[in-house]
Length: 128
Image 1 (cartoon, rainbow, N blue to C red):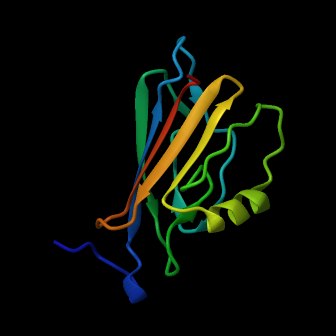
Image 2: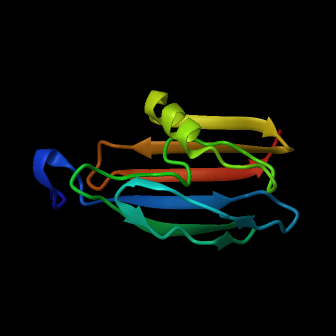
């Protein structure tokens, strides 16, 4: 069964799943986000060993958001987020991105654009 689509085959939404496997009962907090195309409401906090799911609804151009769509970067809480640099990196990335061993953690993001709807899975865990 095909998903509902806008013109030019743009899916109506991307199904997203964010996983927190950081350990030590640490929770993941999203301090900011950015939507270049479409909109979504990712969970603000994800407890350790849990996941948060949400839909990122597309506009007529598509579904591109900045909580880490096929691009991931680990920052200190005090670091300023450069959304333009993230967008530039996102445009150059493939279907998978990782940031390994930074600040004691590793993150990985994988997107599957071939299924209706597209899906995104992001995972945070302690660095090996």
